[in-house]
Image (tube, rainbow, N blue to C red; front, side, top):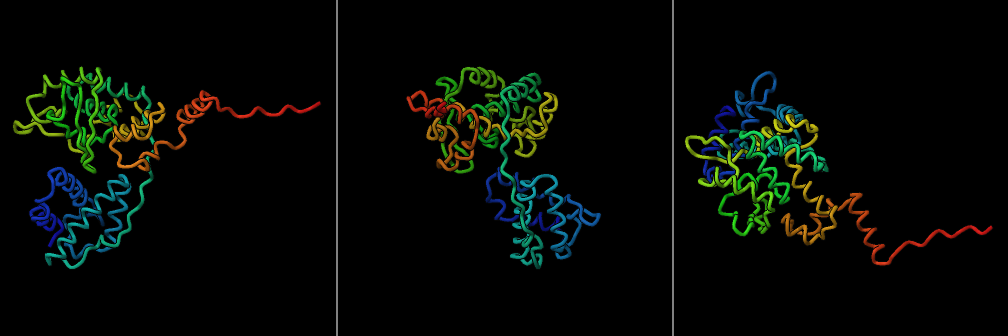
Length: 305
C-alpha cells in the first residue's frame, strides 16, 4: 500500500473521525507536510509504505527540522499515529518513524517592543484583508492569551455591555474572565457591526461557500508575516510571541504571580516562573520597593586616614 492510500485510510477511520474538528485540521496540515516531502528525489506519497526505511524517515525528519523544530516534531508525531494505524490494521508491516529521535526545541524568549506591536496593528488595521489578523493579535497581546484561543473566540463569549470576555482555554480547559479595555472595546463594537451576524469574532474575511471560518493555526502566521514585512518588523518576531510579551510586561509592571495567573490561566506559579527570570525592569522594581520600605544596603565604610 502506498503512503497516500494509508493516510486516506487513517483519515477515514473511526479514530480520526472522533477527533475534535480543530485537531483534524491540524493533523491534515501535518499529513500534507509528510506526503509532499521529497526523499531520494520523489515525494513520500508515491512510496510503498513497506519501502520507506528508517533512514528515509530520518532524512524526512531532518528536512522538517529545517522548517522548524516544532513543525518537525508535530509532523513526526502525527506520522507515527498513521503508521501505527497501518500496523494495527495490517496495512503495513512496520513503523519506520518509530525510532527516529525528536530534537528538543529551544525555549523562545523573544518579546515584542511596544512600538513593534503598534506598527503591526497600524498596518493590519489599514487594510480590510488584514484587519481580523490584527484583531486576533491585539486580543492575544492585551489578554495574554494563545493565538489558537483568540482565532476561535466566539461572540457568545463577549459581553460588549459589561465590557468583559469569558475565555475557555483549549490547552487545559482553564477559564478566565477578563475586562475589555476601552480601546479594544471600541474595535470590538465595530467588529460586531461587520461580523456579528456569524459565530466567530475574527474569522477569515471572505466566506467559503457562504460560511465564515476561523483562520487555520498554520496559515495565520503566514498572513501575519505579510503584515510584519509591510511594517518593517524584525524577522525574529512571531505572532505567537504576543502572549509572552504581554505576560512579561505584567512582570515588569510588578504584578504579582497570582494576579498574572488569573489573566493567563496558568495552572501553577511554576509555569509563570520563566517570565520572572532576570528582567531588568522587574529587578529594578523589586529593589526600589525594598528601599521604599526602609530597607537599604549599608554604606561602604570610609577608609581612615
